[in-house]
Length: 81
Image (tube, rainbow, N blue to C red; front, side):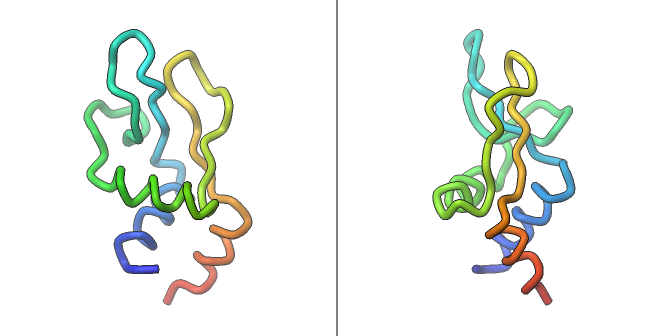
C-alpha cells in the first residue's frame, strides 16, 4: 500500500470521511465529513473499498453514509510506520 492509500485509510479511521449517496441530484462520492466538495482522495478510497479495507455503512442519513475501517484496514494501519 502506498503513502496516499495509508493517508486515506487514516482519514477514514479518524472519522473525517463520509459517502454522499447522490440523492436529489448531487453527485455521489466520498466527501469530507461536514464539508462540501469532492474529496481529492476519492479514487484512492474506491480502491480501498474494493480491497475491503474500508466499508460504507448502510445508513447514517438520507444523503450521507458513514465510512469505516474494516478489520483488514485496521491491520493495515497497524503496519504503518
